[in-house]
Length: 465
Ligand code: PFF
Image (cartoon, rainbow, N blue to C red):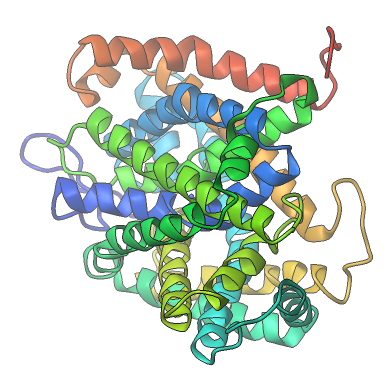
């Protein structure tokens, strides 16, 4: 197995290279965090779970659980400087525990592979919508026509397969180029451009005449209607959107320069990511109500509401195209985070070149992606447990694997690693450190475990939902 070299000051270096600056790291992690989770998934999950109360629980989960888990992942990654599996094994031994912690790293690598298998299919949709937008498909179209366009697209397995193949190809291409040349370049302009466009759309949605109902749907919380299953969905979404609980951030942390503040970088990423999700909700829900659509409509929500809005805007073709291009970029930079742990593992474990590893891992994910492709057409009628095969892969990864692996990662950072190691990585034992340690030792593990056990019905009901 390849091992990272040690530099003059006794600190490890990553054999995959390093980010060129603090800003590059923040951009890369933000690029990984901001993606389909914010713009496609957040609105539809919030819609399916009734809005308001779900959104508030989600925000609590982001700040009280997601952020401490993110900091734990970065500090572990930077200390180990290897792929998540090897890092967990190394630090497990170094901190006087066991190399079996590698299984936590493996769980993350597996979650990334499974998530990317469906993420790439949805990434393919965004790509297809770029072409649909350019050709003016949505100009002046009615809600029924836009809905029919979406259904006819997803019911064609070969179209989905083609787009999925294309999206996977793009991902493999960038990952193969490596940390500095590939990942950094891709994320530099995407986030600012996306933000700008979302604000433009916000202006449109404010003028839709239904902004108030959209805001009320998102923020007026009816806690009586909230079930433990929705709370678990909110927690799963917090993990998913921040890209934590699967080693992606750990893998990125491995390329982080020594002097960068982990707390500052995490805060910047969490705020940007949450801001974009809320912005997406504020754009989408008013449009849903303005057009008499159903917020609980599911995965097609963004692909119906936004084209409809663009179709009735001056310059709509241009804005729609730009929007789907940016969404494709957002999905692309997130896909890089999803595949990086598996690729880094493959490079180190099998001594493959980066390019070979990217192609091997990419091919496996491409094949797995067909489970999702067919879930929208050929086997859409085959439902069990949570729904279609796609629904089940999503549930298993977001609501089970991410929280479980996030739980174990935080327990490792806050209980297994010694105080000296963690405070060294987090820049001393000041207030920020104490807050992290408290959240990571007590709040996050207890909350994850509690919600999880409640949702699967292991803990008895007290009262209400
Ligand atoms: N955070 C991404 C999103 O919200 O779309 C999804 C994601 C990317 C999850 C990378 C996990 C990951 F490692």
